[in-house]
Length: 341
Image (cartoon, rainbow, N blue to C red; front, top):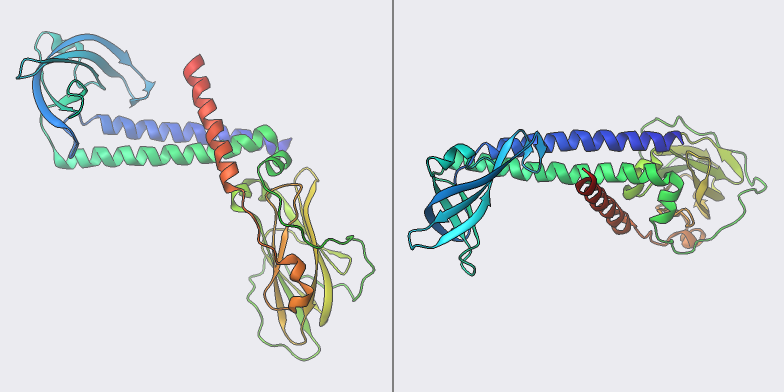
């Protein structure tokens, strides 16, 4: 429950901060009301008659601040009149007494479909305005993804989030995790030590280097959990998702790995036989699953292939499914806000 509350709080903070930053960037962009640096369509100029105006703000789709959205009827040089709504604050109610001259860009296929701005073009300010627009879109996308991910985890809880948005991994060899030890229990190295694979060691010795990883789409879930490791039936302390080294005797060892979620659920169990060669360090990588009902994956880089064939299956990602869920959640949230606010 604590993890779900923290995720919901994080989602609120991300949404608020992201929307404020996005609103500020849009407000900066709207300070420039001249012609854009480059735009498609036929350029026309005409005198505008300002009609009804609405004042929006301090928070709107135009960004932070107060802005005018006004109806205009523009008379073009060829005698045609085009009606449109312009904003933010390209024209104001004060322009009713002194009709302004506006510049429009009209669709070549639909001449009455025009967008109008004020006369004049400042290349530098126009480029800065477009840069602010692009940056605001990037901030909005990051906010939607990060906030949506945190909100999804907060609403479902870590276990359901893992269970609902993953695909089953290919089957791997499984054996009971409780076994009679085949060799003395290895002593783990400190969990926070940096590790690089060892060179050839003295004869009669061996080493097991295990890298613990999790799928990127569910990083917020696994960051609150830890791996669970057993070698030859003996449980070993693993405090975090990093790299750990264990001295072991040369020979075959049964390695069982799973993931322990914050609520105590154990998922991703996989067991495989790993062969540690005499005087050589064996490097093993465990990747946690993206589905609570699926197995993790063990990959061995330097071991007897005969002992690890069952654990060499590829790991299917669930990023698209998780991304679609986050997008759907953001769309639903926008619909609720537009409906009730």
